[in-house]
Length: 158
Image (tube, rainbow, N blue to C red; front, top):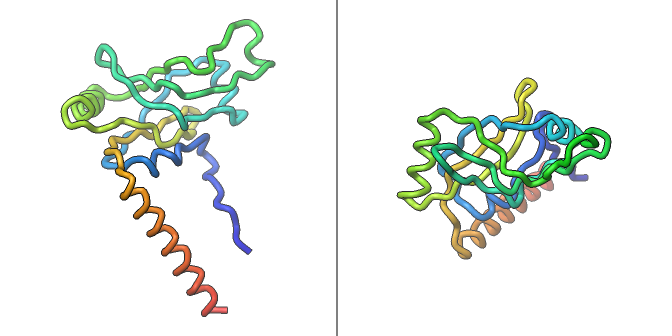
């Protein structure tokens, strides 16, 4: 019997597609600037970052395309925008490093996961390089080999 991998207790959502599409070079932790209804919706597990990416404007970083499904009960007095652009809270040095790598070295800046840290929502973002098709196939082949190897060891132990 195989157990399904559980996500950590503090994790809100993960971008599994990013690890398949990119080689991750360096990761950063950024805070998210949110509205009240968004925090309530996130607590209910209504957030997705699979189609999200990071943009830079006026020396600031923004999370673009993250989807937060509004709750009916907490968003009656406002008109919520589920895919609005949200500001990422980073140090100036980090923003400059990310901006320089994206614009000069051809890196992509992608969100990997969102999680709770104390009572704040944090987003793990990464500088990444896109994989070619043959790299993706090699990754899948290596993963299958590791899984088969583990199965073989478990059968010999039983």
